[in-house]
Length: 263
Length: 322
Image (cartoon, rainbow over all chains, first blue to last red; front, side, top):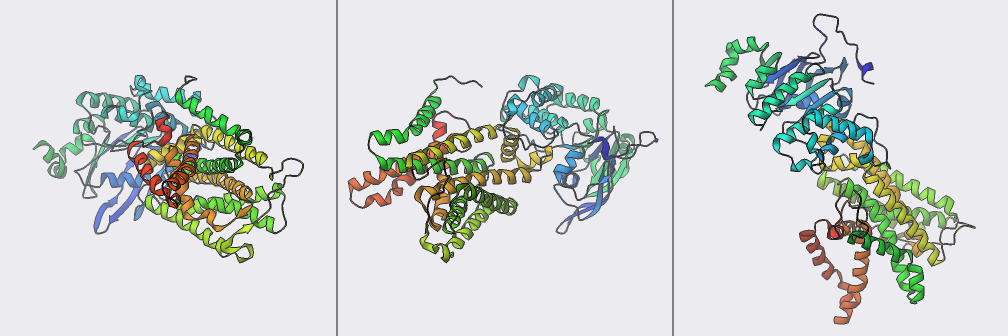
């Protein structure tokens, strides 16, 4: 299903972007939350989106996932215009996400959470009689997913009983269960300890070969360690975009954003 | 996952089902015919509550118009009967189809809303059917309609009270079985996941709306079945069977029994009718005429359940919500 979705052009020097927006605009009343944003993510690339609080990062993610409708502009994913597609249809095309505020199914066990994520990509769920808890296909894939993020031993624990860091890991396991081609990561390091963050950085680094990522993150160490490209958003507008070195040297960025960090 | 065979909840549930299964024999042995008709109503209301439990319990959606299915199932049988079509093989499928259509219509519109708006819109749709039935002068209007019971020639005689009871009981067992399976099926997992976190389920790739709509339709069919049975129980249909009070009673039964627990609706219905039957004479005994106001005692009981036993009777027995 997924293979038929788009022609990929790995052969060219710069591969066709997996995800791209063209002059995206979103207003909330008088506030221009997304101001003509054109951004793209290529396969196998980590593109970081940074900016101060209120810069419109989450609003932009909302439009990419389909939770918010842009006022104008287009979003293309995997070779298709997905601007008007509902969330679930974009996910089916391979657009996974993790949430800024941990968003797991709190009453479900860790493995049930991931099993549901696996189930979402295993055809329709209009099956009324067979017990999912004995569905080996789902359980085994879910256990592998938990193992991959280092939560294997906590499979039976209820999600609400997991530590904050563990819930973040679970969140990523769920996002990865559908084998997305592109992952939207909304502050995956938020609230994590130093050690947990470092482990996640290494994990995402290893993941890069399998899927592209759009990373929103406040942890600048993580951003500069991971990103191939960085785009800086201020007041809904892109003020700079380039390699980590270019961004580090960019005067406007230093003043608007990094300056605050280092001051 | 395997359960000790003699845990209290297994014992209580098994005992309850055994008593219900043998009820016609028991009422005959003790010469309490009236209790059989109470038992029949309990069983039919249990089926309706099982149906509501799919939406309310597993789906987490408070439908305040569920009695409409009593009415639609009942009136479909009643109107066909009044038009001279007595055959159950015609009546029942038509009634089920009407209930399914209604569920699809109401679901498609009301599932676009959330919270209080969902409650209000489901109530509004139920009131619509209520007043529609009141206005059906040709079929009795406000006074309702006496009907003759569905005929299944050569198979069942529904005029026989024990036969009819056992049919209702068998259908209840089938719905309980089905709901238990449904809760832990792939479909049930999606429904319960959306109850827990709808946004997350969409982000996982589930078209939540579609699954909820199908849940409404399944529940509607089961609710319509309860309506068919209710019409046959009294050989009578009237708008009163779908008043908003009945929708409220159904919610009370599900909450009292235990939201989202397979046997919750059964406990709830048994407790609800048992309390009604016990409180009325008890209050009358204290002072003649007080029995009518049994809900003055029942109300505070519900408040206590809501405050101290969130999972209803089922949680007191040690059941966990699915």
